[in-house]
Image 1 (cartoon, rainbow, N blue to C red):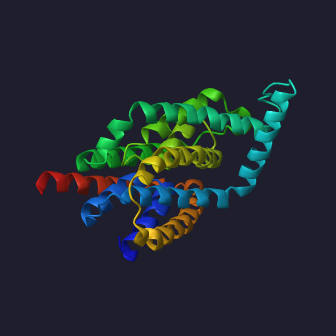
Image 2: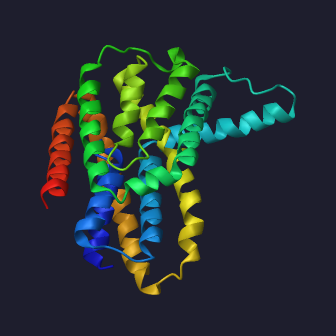
Length: 277
């Protein structure tokens, strides 16, 4: 893998992970059209996810720190016999909502892992998924009446959002876009919906790394890939940071239709390529 390919893939991963255009779909397309293959591609993809994880931590460091400290207090309450005390404060409640949202995502990921893996090899499936993403974004742009904040969010809303996130494991379905739609469908206020979508990406990304890393490490690591991987991680982290900030502004400014048109166009081009080439 060349330095150019590492920069390109890192840039696409960082931007497309948090902009609603599907990082998995874009990476699959790039690997197909650039002919990027080999047993070390998986370890590279895993490390790019680590880079995007850094992005979320950089943007939401204060919230993440508070959630971690509250988690320690949960353990203390359990060991002292006070129980979970889910509604003790908003930070603890948010933490449990994130956990609840992660459960259906994990179930879908495990149950349909082989199915999702096979979709990465199908340009037709990726093209159709991109069209679905465009439609979800179009719907999200029109669901702007929700006003519910954290205090009004119910656990069933978290389950709905988690299901949407689980479906986004399919390449071409945007995770940030689908979880945003799930939040807006549940009546959440837009800015809180996008914040929750990014926070629940943390266990999702960590989970994918934990699942894929053992398989990636079973291959003989090519030492020559160390520099491309390092560069790719740095680029994905920086571009991911920019993408999160951009997505927050886009949602607030009601400009999701831009990404809707983009994913519709890209999906149509991919399908056109598969049908006529």
